[in-house]
Length: 138
Image 1 (cartoon, rainbow, N blue to C red):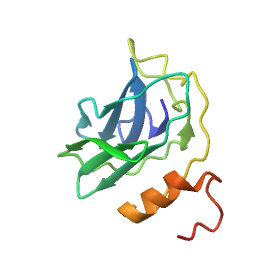
Image 2 (cartoon, rainbow, N blue to C red):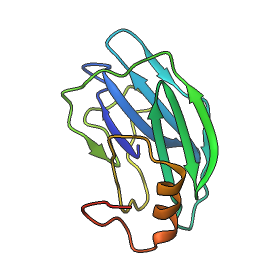
Image 3 (cartoon, rainbow, N blue to C red):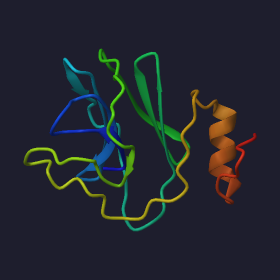
Image 4 (spheres, helix red, strand yellow):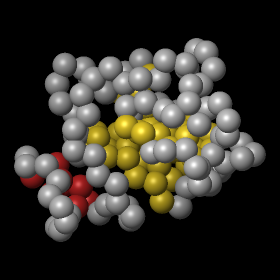
């Protein structure tokens, strides 16, 4: 699990971004139904990767090293979850076979924005080499 604000045990509300067998997926849930994307991209191991996931108008886009690798359209609008936002894991375990959701790797420079990043903003982040500065100004 890369990022999650989702509970697999008590409520299916929220969202998650995860890697399973080197493939990147997104899950969106509300109290009625859940949706999981098809594979959005394959991510390599052994070196740093720059990953941006965006969500707008039910479309999820996955940029890996500043290249659009995949996108998917969901019919689910995720609902708010009372579960804590997590990096590298989930708040409560999912049933098998997804019960070991811990990310086994390094995660650095997480940014969450209230709007979809433009091509210029994504490129600036990718080429900056100095991480995200606060406040984030492009």
